[in-house]
Image (cartoon, rainbow, N blue to C red; front, side, top):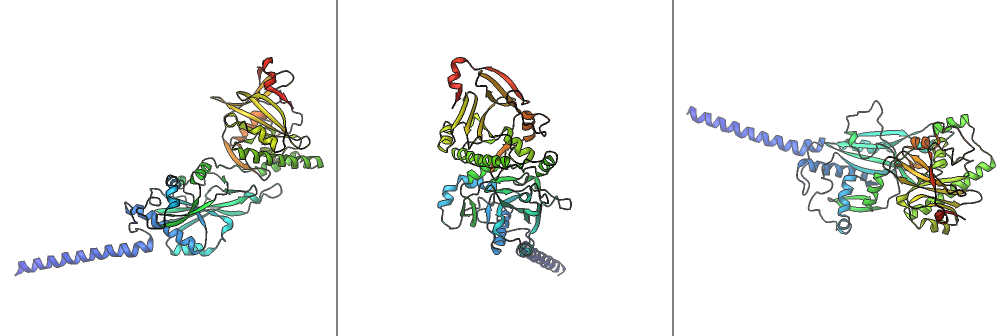
Length: 461
């Protein structure tokens, strides 16, 4: 009798433990997971609960911004890379259920979206709703560079980045702003001292290491993994832009200090020249951009941007640089068609090419072509009356975007080294008398053009 009672007791205890364990599992899965975002059920076609977590966090975030009517665009480079391979299929696919979770279940720590600032109002309600849905959030503010100028360096703070975290995944929402050069800009992600630097692995973020500049993308509404999202219509173009998007702000604080020592020329002639130079630069940018030719501010025009955030009024010209690898035979006829006659053509494509076009009155446009060597980059110069050649050496540089006279335009990222190479350590001191053959710090004599080539390499109109 005693033996039977012992077995019964053991059986009852085992059954009770099993029921309790099943209850705990049920409670954890269907209550705690929904409340805390700890674990999610598997999405269609996903391989693991972790994969499914990413999809569910994105779904919840899209629900959040839908409640508050906030239009966002997917700009995550890892997902856009996957989308680009399937773009034709995605465009033509129906809204039926996806056979697998391919895009939002891909391994990563973040999913990145973009928000155009003017498309919504900064409402506290968004963050209250986010908290009710289980999100933790972080807002990153910094000064608005659009308000900076010679007379105002107050820099009112604006939101640049939002991060929403749920479970083991985070949503990075990058805020884009329109700039006067008719382009979109986002700021850097700089944490202030009181912020939690362990909130997410910030170093892994794709946006925020530096400011970026982009053309306004055309958007496309698509269905990805059974979720409706907007994406750039041409993902490959956006990804290409992203790889060269770094933006440099004009140095207004340094420019103001410069003008305190060297007062700005506000004469009628200076104002008129700057107006004509701005118009000429805008026209040149339009022509070269239409041709797909990458260019940057060079020589005195670059110095004016870097030193005083404006055109140097006594320079009398606009200077641009182009890598010789980007040269196109259509450049000359395109400028001529736009009403800018060729003033001179020196050198040839293989060596020291230089073009000059005549703008309004005495304002001209000089285009210098740059040649890359193993250790340096150089452009050439030619003296018409003697056939002498000159060479201007620069340390290697990359290109960044900036905004100059209401235009999105390239400058060397390593601007200080570029300017110092051309103008020496005293580049901050204005020099109104400039001899292009002797004044530059980086000029070298480079021989003489053979007389039998003069008709080709020295053309004056």
